[in-house]
Amino acid sequence: MSREIKRAGNYQRFETTQRYHMISLDEEDFYVWRGPDRLELSDFGHEASEILHEGDYFLFIPRNEPGLKAGIHHLACQEGEQYRVYMLPQGLPSRANQLVDILEAPELLPRESIFV
Image (tube, rainbow, N blue to C red; front, side, top):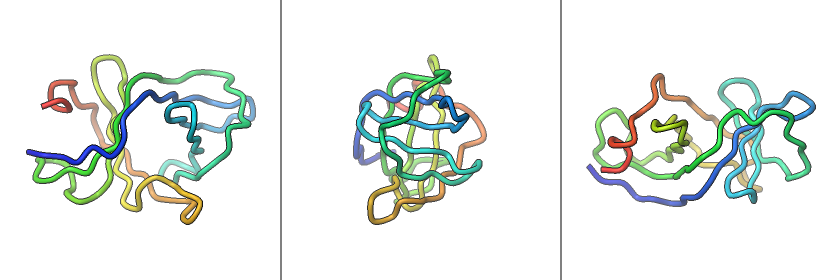
């Protein structure tokens, strides 16, 4: 098993006062969920009304890891001692590609399987 770590830090997933679900990475990059399977680049001007989850995250590309699609960006977000993993076939949203697909893994992964 191996992976290429592209980015790591702290994230916060929250609901805004306008009831949008958002995620911020390192309090620098902000993304809004557009339905259950689309993520859009956003700005930082959103006020959180409820913090849903926060903790460590890392963005990686797996190579030969069971259960993970090789060569595709994955975002692992800490929820307690486990991690929720999202697959990002087009990578994170960017100025050039502001709306991307995001697919949530069906189950949380234990910390030990993330940090092997």
